[in-house]
Amino acid sequence: MNNTSQSILKTILLTPIVVLGNISESRRWAYYLIFPSLLMISLVVIYPVLNGIGLSFQEKQLTRPNRDGYVGFDHYVELFTDDDEFWVALKNTGIWVIAGTLSQFTLGLCTALALNKSGHMTKIVGVLVLLPWVMPSVVAANIWALLLDSRLGVINDILVNMGLLTDYLAWFANKETAMASALIVELWRGFPFFTLLLLAGLQGIPEDYYEAASVDGASRWDKFWFITIPMLRAVIIASVILRVISLINSPDILLILTGGGPGDTTQVLSLYAFQTAYLDFDFGYAGALSVVMFAILMIFTVLYIRASGGVTEE
Amino acid sequence: MISNQKTVDRIVEVIRWTFLTFVLIFALFPIIWTFLTSFKIELDIVTSDLQYLPERITFDNYVAIWTRSGFPTLIQNSVATTLMTLVICLVLGSLAAYGFSRYQFRGRYSLLLFYLVLRMFPVVLMIIPLFILMKNLGLLNSSFGLALAYTTFLLPICTWMMKGFFDAIPPELEDAARIDGCTRLGALFRIILPLARSGLVATGVFIGIAAWNDYLFALMLTTGVDSRTWPVGLALMVGEFQLPWGALSAGGIISIIPVMILFGLVQQTLVRGITAGAVKG
Image (cartoon, rainbow over all chains, first blue to last red):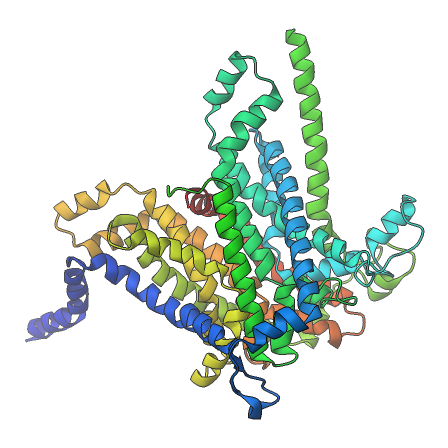
């Protein structure tokens, strides 16, 4: 009796596993594996994105709900013809992305090259330089706000002591220095990302290539230009795209440090869209702004991949 | 000629280390400065005569942030949100990654590419409808809702990273298990997952850090104290404390300690996972 009930219990408990095991033998197994994640992505990404695109054709202001309704391309027309801030933000986004990517890539590549040697010390340095990259944006921004503070900032102190500066500067409140300062913060947080990826790429280049080149009498520069760079191409393309995406899409640092100011000198598209949505509660217009951002990203990615000769899978 | 070559090598080595020293200072000085500031008393922080090393060491800043600002609640909320994000992403992401890694099927390549393109959607574009959706589902101001929002960008990354780790495990292992009578599911759980353990941990750490650090989603989707995460709390604190630097530094140090420990522990596998995805894809 006891035995039977035990075996019944066992069957009940094991049935789901057996059933799942049987399902795994069906021809659609691969689809079953992917389906749950696809469902989740449809719910939290696809639906919101489509909805957001829809919003861009509507009037939807939380503060004035009586005006809600379909407005067609009105927001887009207003954006391109009647919104000075949009054009300023577009220009600043260009500066932000180009200067940001170039500076981070250059420092990241140089660091990766310097780290591409064996040795204990090199390895330790390789881990330590990655630390800024795992810093939360809130902490990173506040650290730099303190470092560059107009009264208490240690960087002001160092520069004045070195004689490079006569007086303490309010780096983020000054129109000439705000953008550059924010770019330094972004450089600090972003260059380890390039170091990480490019170093991995460098370590994947077979040593024989360099040896063969040495036999042929190639200089260091030749080796760099004709072996290293071409071999790194895929990594460079991938890392630049990923970086540009994150520079365009995430306004964290600017949101915390400058809020787009002083004036509009650090206003970028992502921040503008964000403020439109959450300070003005104008969801429709913010939607239109983000759709424009997305279009710019798509165009950039396609052109960039074309220009660099395409990427092949694996 | 040979000695000449040696001189050049030595010069290169000197340049290399000089450069690395500068990079290291650039990378670490801000963090070290924050660490030092967190132990200074307020008077020593705001003094016009800048102190490089704290002359008087105090733990008041840590006490202040822990007792005066509801920081424990913020940390608790962050832990809850991060754990939920981890479970959702690792379960769904690993299954999908395994499917992508092991099976050829129609639409595989397009789907993989689609998972990459997902990153391009502007966060702002998604946040507005997500906000409305969460509000309608009653998930606004909940850790679970926030965790769901994090899957928007973390699930695709998780899938790509795990695919890289699964790709590295030879398929012959499953074939052998199946000849021994294992179902595909059995092979996945008994053979593959144990082998992919370090990859799972590394992916988990990466996702955990991203969820723990996020500011934008948390700022938008949590408005109340009971679900707010620490980055938002810390940012709001700037207004709460009169001269916030000591407390802010202490808060910053507390919140990055888990990140640094976890990152240090799985750093090598993590780097392999991230780079495999990007280098191959």
